[in-house]
View: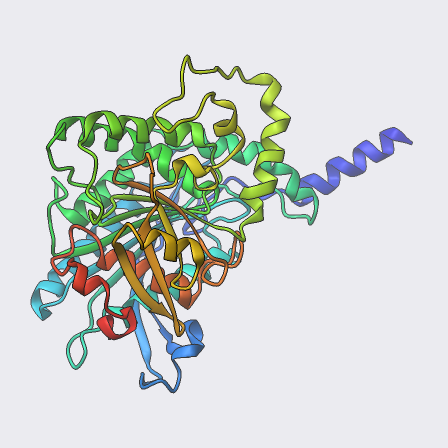
Amino acid sequence: MSRIAFVLSVIVLSAGCVGNHPYRIHYNGTTAEVDPVKEEKLKTKEFDALQTGAGIPEREWPYKLGFVEFDDRGEMFDRRQVDNAVKAIETAKDEARTNGTNAVVMVFVHGWKNNASETSGNVWGVRQMLAGLALQYKVPGGPQAPVVGIYIGWRGAVLSPPIIKEFTVLDRRDKSQNLPSAHMVEALLRIMRAAKGPDFEDASTVSVLIGHSFGGAVLETALTQTLEGLVVKAGPGGTVHWPANLIMFLNEAQEATRSYQLIESLMTNLEPRQPLDAPGIISISSTGDYATRAFFPAVQSVTRPFNSLRRYPGPNKLGIKSQTPMYFNTTAHLKQFRSHLFGRDDDPAIKAALQCCQPFMEATIAGVKYVIVEKPGALNRTPYWVMQLPPSLVPDHSTIFTPQFRSVLVNFLLGSSLNPLNTPTYRKMNVEKVVR
């Protein structure tokens, strides 16, 4: 009977296996056809029903969407995907120069149980986000800012049957940390340099890199070496030219021990940031994200016996006595890492912080006023911001492609140190009034 059960299990798992193959490349014998970067449009009601009837016409908002896919060893499936992405960005920048706007480039790295297929919810969500950015960056009474999205695809899903696929979490957790090797670093660098120039100083493009869930682990691991090089090169008193206007790890599913090394290096090699200095990197998680608040520590407990963690001779630079809490928790869910508070203006913690700190940003989102303010007494005074955000903006781990989150993202972009309009007065304006 046990043999029959084993055979049936193998059959079920084989039938539900998600292959290690690309979705945007089509093979015909020995030749391969790569999908071009697509020009698409979404109507307002398809990504933001709240905007309908609010003075915004029901129209189509254009954007371009390209894909760069990696196999399960971190190797590009086809370099032409990166070539196409770079050409699309260069074309958008030419168009922006012609019509007097700024090109907008968003790179998104998906997480667990997703890929680059049309059945992946993240693909549709990115489309909604790009169309929303086209709406936000439309010059009132003027031309449309060109928007380009690059979707980084990897094998986040390996099994499709319900329940069974949940048991892939350890495998995909480890894959998210060792998949970003030479090819992914190269692809990201080429895309970032196309957007921001070889030294990342081109202010004509608004760019953002977002990694969600295990995709945050993929993105942070892929970028860390590059970021360290920029930080050490700048040194104390120097200026770091970040490779994008904003790098965001959203509901990141990665142990905080990895982020700590980068934050500690920033604390060592750079002068402490001033209270109203803009971020270069943000790790941000919803307080409603129980996948990383509760499930992630439970998963880490399974592998804890196989990892050697040390105590520090004294508290480390964030006041933590050992690596253990950083191993069990993600960065944004550890209070010692947090640099800022993000909440409603009537939140008691926000009101208390405003007694001693100026707000970095004030924004009205869906009729509610929110504030971002430095956390009083925070030890993390680096350009790597860490914070939580309320579930009214991001309700849980996966529900991120919402008008509310897009408003959060645009507010951060407006606050970027690379944005020529970055002033305290400008940041206090309602984002909905600024960008229309």
